[in-house]
View 1 (cartoon, rainbow, N blue to C red):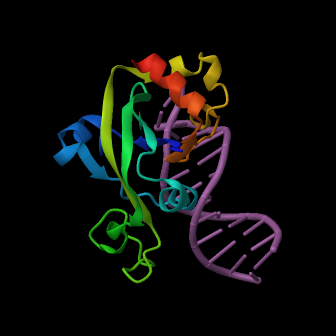
View 2: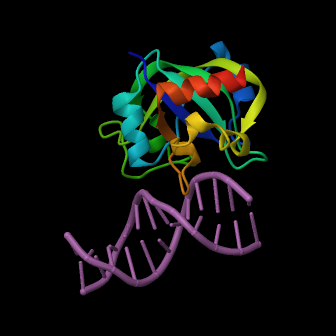
View 3: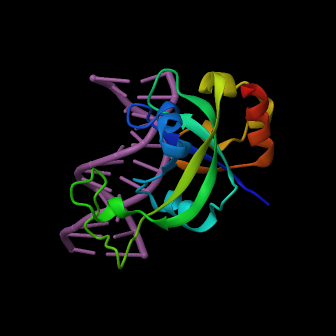
Length: 154
DNA sequence: GCCAACGTTGGC
DNA sequence: GCCAACGTTGGC
C-alpha cells in the first residue's frame, strides 16, 4: 500500500517549476536536517508513495502539485560536504546521519491551493500542515487528505 | 520585520 | 536528565 506525504520547500531555493526542468523531472530531496523528518525519509518513504508539493515562505503559501517517490531513503552526501549550506560536521560517509529520497514530478496544479483556501475544507481539518505551529518539512498525509487535495487541484 | 512555536545545545 | 539560552521556521 502506497503512503502519502507532503514535502515543503521554499520556491526561491527549489520550486516545482525547477523540478519540471530537472533531468527526468526527478530530483534528490537533500538538505533535510530535522530528525523527525529524517526518520520519515530514511525509514518510511518507499517507491510509489504519493507526495504533495508545498511552497512555503512565499505569497501565498500553497500546495502547488504532486510528485512520486522514485527512490527510497539513502544517505544525503551534502551533509559531509563542507561547502554545502547544510554541512554537518558530525556526518560522514561511514556515519551518514542524514537521509534523502528521490522524487519525480507528478503534476503541477492549474491553480495553486493556498493555505487560506485549504483551511476551509472540512476533510482537511486535522491536516498536519494546517496545525498551528506546524514546522515539519516532511509530513505524513492521510489517503483521505491526499484525495481531498487532489479534488481541489484538478 | 514580528513573533509564536518549536528543536537543539550545553552547563550544571 | 533538567532546563535556560539560543537558533530556526514560516505564517502573518
